[in-house]
Amino acid sequence: MRLLLLTHGFNSLTQRLFVDLRDDGHTVSVEFDVSDDVTREAVDLFAPDLVIAPFLKRAIPEDVWRRVRCLIVHPGVVGDRGPSALDWAILEGARTWGVTVIEAAADLDAGDVWAARTFPMRPATKSSLYRTEVTDGAVAAVREALDKIRAGQTRGTPVSPDASGVPGRPRPAMTQADRRIDWTTDTTAQVLAKVRASDGFPGVRDEILGLPVSLYHARPALGLAGAPGQVLGSGGEAVAIATTDGAVWIGHLIDRSGACDPLKLPAVRVLGRQRLAEVPELPAGPLEIWTERQDGVCFIHFPFHNGAMTADQCRRLRAAFLAAVDGDERIIALMGGPEFWSNGLHLTVIEAADSPADESWATIRAMNDLAGAILTRTDRWVVSAMQGNAGAGGVFLALAADVVWARAGVVLNPHYKGMGNLYGSEYWTYVLPRRVGEARARRIAEARLPMGTAEALRLGLLDDAFGADAAAFRADLRQRLAALAADPRTLDARLADKAARRAADEAARPLAAYQTAELEHMRLNFFGFDPSYHIARSHFVHKTPKAHTPLALALHRRGAATP
Image (cartoon, one colour):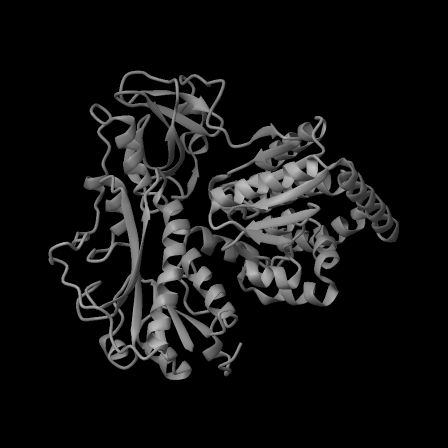
């Protein structure tokens, strides 16, 4: 079928549908919901069999949905209506939730139901649930709806929101009053629910040490307690605040005072040294990097918030890797986090720096040092284990390992150019061609498109993809690596081959030469006359609405109707 994805932005769900529906053989084009006239024009140009709206903030024009069938992906159970579906589900402690594919109609979220999926809720943020359970359910439900339409079904199932037995109901948009934390009465569970229901948008408005802020990234602070609302201390980049029955770590804040750019940043950076001068520094904050050793394997976990990496995080991860390889285990598994493996440079921290160019340079150098440590350690077998999505430098950092495995359904963005024609480093000019060949490497780097695991396997970017979810992926991963660790002859042979190949590659062209050439381009990106990277980064960080859809996504605007 010819499918037009109409979306407010190219978010994680839209990207997953884009790659999976293309893999299913459909012709897929994308249009950003800029205006009603732009939507009408996209429908005229592409003449789709169906419009799918995975992420909208406005209603589709009536003359569009009356002209062509439009299916809306709603992150709620059947009968649920309103823009805060997942927010309410988290705040009210729903045990199960779902995603529904609804046909566009005059009343929002009230059209015929074409397909739906439900899932058990887990204690997680709205963002985490959306990227995993909601996205997996949406893909399955959209595929079911497409199968019904292709089989000749002409309409979905009419559902009255007030009908007996329907689990959902109409609900208003959640306000800051609904999200408000009362530190004098709220328990740890209640505080966590409110912040999780608001993460990553719009956050919970509050005040810490006299500063108006929005709260994000809350986690339990085990073993801590104090007067409710008291800032108990800082640990790492987070601050601990007492609840009525314990405490929570708040990892990120936005300064709402109006005195500076309202960017989501690590909490300690937002509050600043002066406000925290009287606050004790706690010996242990929430863990960002930790290792576990099991069955001859050392697993390194680094679930950085949204997969973004600062210069300091890169340095600490490199130190953790070097400590791991000094142990007895000869297999190292780089685990990332359950939602993201890595997305490369922490663009928000860079944007907030006194000199974004200098901060960009420091971060890319730290990432290169990390990648170089992985590439040059030939006496250890290194696996990049992608439980979650990866993008830009995070993808190429993963390719520094000997094997790259991913959870089925992970989405990769193996390119830099969408960020203002950024050239990229992390030795990508070495690690990508050695995996896929020079010709494919050029096509991948220039494509500026997301890639699913099926395509990544076909191209050789991944070695394998497995596991229906992150837990299944981890279980299978552990079995595979334990089996390899128990087979020293096979492991010895692999390490010998690795050392020989690295020596041959180094003789042909030293790693330092790749880095020098890449950094010459990056220096121009950061410090040169072309401001494209800095403009693109600012737009990305500030979530500036797109004025148009990139031609890489909008087939209909390239004068072509085929991929």
